[in-house]
Length: 212
Image (cartoon, rainbow, N blue to C red; front, side, top):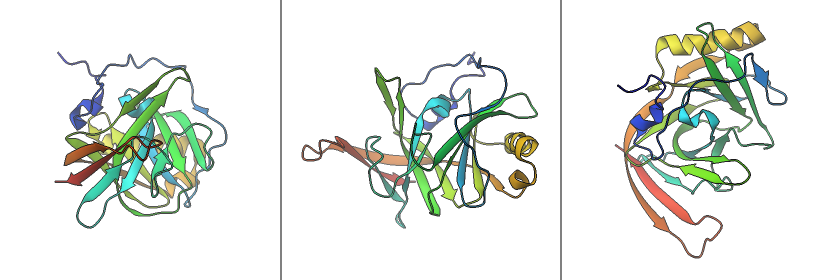
């Protein structure tokens, strides 16, 4: 039987599926300042989800449904990043919902809107680095300021999971959190082609993908 804590990222067709035991330090904690504002964009991830501990990079989707990954390199133009350590304009907090589940809520001051797709994820211990990228499925966000995008344990968030995140933020930030918009990410099938670019050694690889 598949554990209920099996990373839902497996449903995205990504490499490196594994399990977390869900154990974390009790209580909520912010990693530095955390602001609730209509001017910021938010992403909430269950801490039992593999991407709960990754820096996540989203790329704009063009009118043809295409987007490009940049091998986890944040400098790639147009990238919206969440959870990048010590990055200007980015904030995060670990917070517990009314259900008792814990979420990592990340925010960025990026002033952008439109359809974006998950292109890369990076986790670094300072000694080694783990990279993850979509192969057959990904998640998309309709980014807009003042919106909390919720990843569920099965990628698409249920109404109960969205309400749980809203309840967690509302209990801590009151009316400011109530005024935000809450919605699920959307899982989408994709077709990708990866290629290395020797002349761009700082990037190393680019992945061209198209939503189906």
